Length: 324
Image (cartoon, rainbow, N blue to C red):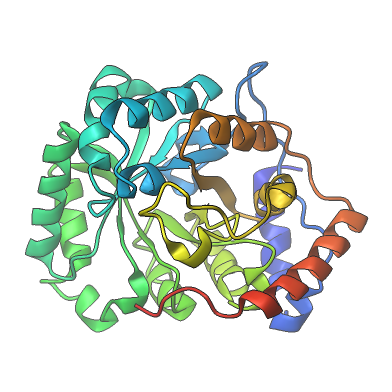
């Protein structure tokens, strides 16, 4: 099935769905990926027109737990060896931006680098981007996302002195290629922002458990499809327990035995381009890459079983993302 027909079918089906209907839907089909033998498949990141690996490396675990530079870079190199091209970072991930700089200089053509800003003013956004560029040792990043859009004042966001104006000015200056938003709170903020058609990329939590607790999947995906916004998943494994990334003992909410199905579930969502997984060592990179490289759509039995398990775990987890 081609990407355009998949998107049309999803929009047609989603237009009249209630939340309970969507949660009970059967397995969702996605376009087939192609890739050279032994490498990670790639998908088109929405209207950016850029093909990125279906697995991305999140650098929060390495940066926030204060791993030394050599350890940090060995994990990034392991990801590159597996065919990962999408790298996710932000200013408060410890020294992650600084530690990524040498590899970015050395391997620039192979890295699609995304950083973020939490600033809500135009000038604050420009200053934040300039600082990130300095730490990364580059004049341009591939994308900058407004971090935690759920706390943004949306009226201010679209004013002449708001954060969107800062992103667009940075793009005009050649400091950023694409602009987007991210967050794990208030999906209605995503919807209102994406409906303007201004954003190229959206990053939100998607997993088979949280679909029963939060409405990111139901609310964001149809809007992203209408505007051809590239969608990137975070928290596919539920995120770290307690969202504590500042310890080297951190572990994912989902048990390791569920990781492959969890990644397959998310990669089967319509409009979904890339699953970003935080990894602390090369072995975690290898395991995540194996799951992504072997991606195949869930069959009906797997999908039904995963929904049942997801409902059970959702009752245990509850609402676990911070409000703010």
